[in-house]
Length: 385
Ligand code: USQ
Image (cartoon, rainbow, N blue to C red; front, side, top):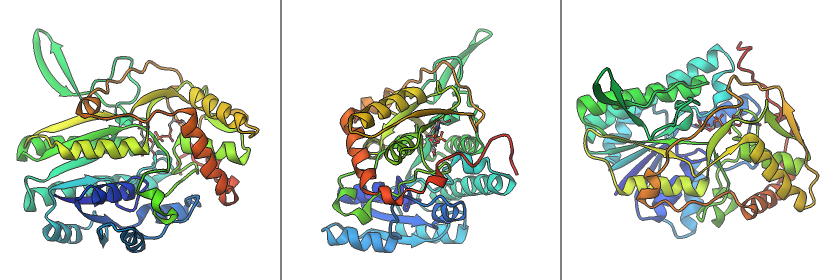
């Protein structure tokens, strides 16, 4: 099986590339290093610098693994990505090649435009590559739970049956995001559904919650193979940020009341979900949607849990409530379905005390790299430039 990974340099893209190669897939990756460029422009670089793809591939190969093919270029460039597709002819494509930061997308006009253009163009080009070169190719698209927002009803797994004035039909579950980044993912889903209906492409859309963690069996082979670990306000997700803050002695930055609930998962479970999705593709013309998370927590629950474990390790940890830089509901109903991936065989790795301890230990070893000026929110939803 040939797997093509778009956004193969990213926090999730690179660990996925290694996992699929370890599982015997013939893996190719594409990246234009957009996230590295934005991180350096916004002073948000990772805690530990990681090599670029060609070097990572060589390091991975020295551990007895097959060599991953690297294509450096933009998925928004049709000539380039069409050439890659025609060359690789993948059986499945995993699409991570998007600007992934909600705060960045809300920073101002230029950042909003870049997010929209990049995310829509990369998805659109991917769809047309499949239609032109490999119509049976399975597209695995990283969506986000944030597409649904926080409605006052149960969130279904992608679809909802509606009974209206005595007639029934099935529709995409209503979506109402609270950042432009999340809105760009809604537009992606609409494009994929349109082309699944009209051209019969086969798609799995993984509606993922915020991911945490750093350790995977392949990344643990060599520190230079680890995922790019961000803890700043632009690219850092909340659990990763709280771990770094606990190590640095900075009060944990709970935004607003802290009753915002999200569905979270360990990076190990992201990899499992992708493996499971790839192993059982949907039929032609199907848009299959899974809600991809393993546990729900409020921000307050996360902060308290991490603070308790860190305090037990002798760290002095406080929790701060900052004025929320985002516009989001800070107290809401939240009950999303998420049985589909469990039914495929997902074995969750929950956020236990031991997981937090291990994580605090690793960040502690790299404490000298923490730059405190990257912690406080530098973007607000209200003051776009
Ligand atoms: N939060 C804090 N303090 C912080 C950082 C975040 O209270 O220091 C809060 C946020 O306000 C939010 C929650 O924690 O209520 C999650 O924030 P996040 O930064 O971990 O996640 P988010 O910006 O929503 O985006 C991340 C990834 C994105 C992915 C998404 C999944 O960056 O690529 O799509 O998680 S989800 O949130 O389910 O849409």
